[in-house]
Length: 425
Image 1 (spheres, helix red, strand yellow):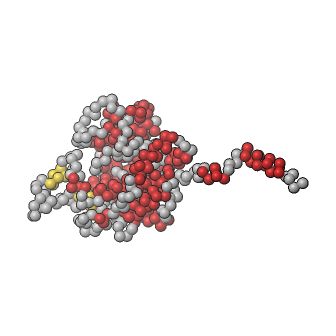
Image 2 (cartoon, one colour):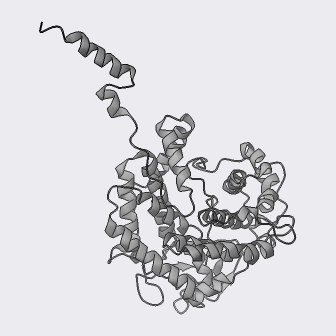
Image 3 (cartoon, helix red, strand yellow):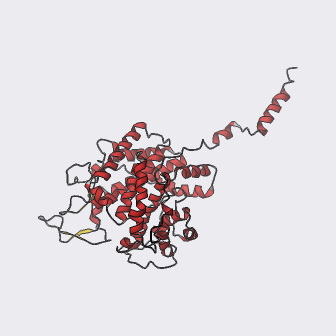
């Protein structure tokens, strides 16, 4: 009698198996719950979530791309953190917490002497980078801070490896939050010129060209990264709010907002992203909307060229560089209900035309017909990707012909244009 229930147990077990139950050992290896959608400003958070889900399901292309991303992130694990207080001498105001950088294209006109240690006066040599700018200031360290925070946060989001999140948190706390090492939220002494200016409005581009990557890195960490605390989130939000207000209200900020070339475009992009990240959605929307008549119409010609950028000795670099700002502005616009890609100016000016103007050189089909000291075809890769994603058929056909940038083409993981041929703005 005691053995009779056994067939019932077997039937129940068989029914559970046929209904989809899996052994406990197998269940432990299944992918975790879907990741949160990060509240990113430029990157599309919902798209990142879907990419992560595809990766967890074994997408081979994504696994290869994540391998390249991990290579980038791994190099940061044993570097840094960096701090604004490490420079050998403080900014002209005397506060070591103030950011300091030197104008990249200004050179001494005389040999340094005891009475003239800088070799003043300084003279401009457009497109030729003075190696002095990479020593004695914060310029290189801030680039490492921004790049590492972005790479590490993305690597954590896609792999779940807490080492990446913890390192990103350390980097961000050291540069922005820790009282002993934090940076003051201003750029009063960016791109100074020895013996001439203690700082300049155009120095804002030191941040505007890539600070939106930090905003997205913060959003990624806030999607559940280990070690990134509520205290960190609150303190970083305060820093970003103070920096946003400095950009809007300072004399330097107002001057940069009035610029009519890539400086103005990047200023708008940075302000829109900061406004969105700090909850000022109306300001973000208004800034993107104003880009149509304030930037695209006067700065892009009817044939898609960018006349202000073509006057530079690095015309290819600056044409692609300006489009990094435009395509990121368009991405921010997506979050606030503005389709910047759809805008056409009174003479047909548009972002699509500006990208299409680059395609012959970007695909290698033709030589770039304007001055360029150091042509790098891959500089256009990300902006062509952005236009293709936005529906530009010419750009879509061009994508297979693009040159892969150093470190691999990571567009599939972080679909937001980066400045791929980095030189100072």
